[in-house]
Image 1 (cartoon, rainbow, N blue to C red):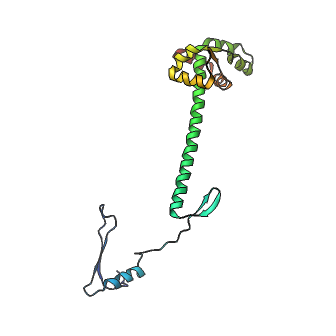
Image 2 (cartoon, rainbow, N blue to C red; image 1 turned 45 degrees about the vertical axis):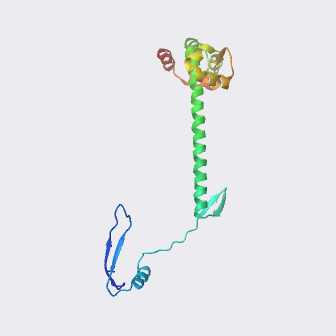
Image 3 (cartoon, rainbow, N blue to C red; image 1 turned 90 degrees about the horizontal axis):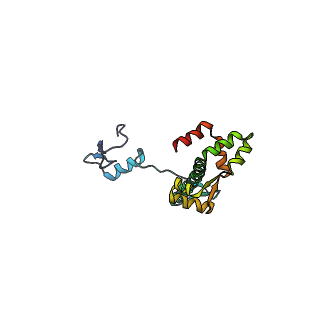
Length: 188
């Protein structure tokens, strides 16, 4: 318009606002033919642009050319898969932490005996074997983790009068310093 390549236009205004995000007003001269001006706009300006796309994606490990709908469906399937895997990972991590905390509760019920065993042991393996034999009464564990938690604990480990530490729980206790073990007792 400013270079006079398109004849018949007197003014171009941008009237875009919040209600109409894109509104461009083109005022024509009285003698201008709107069809001719429109064709000139298409020819000499970026009023309309064509873009070619090849929507290529890996689907089940093989490259495929997809339509827009198929691309969106594959993207959604991918995101669901990623979210499911991440959630399963976080759930497994939380279950491991829960298992460790249950071991700390069992240790807390017998903290004096566990400290005595650790101090008397000559090696880490001997200490681990010794504390894995320490038994916590079921009633005491039930009070510590609550009724619902204890029911779930029994489903996982089976019903018994007393429970001992697993190897993972024993390792977690042995990784603690003596000061941390004493603090467990004081927090009781």
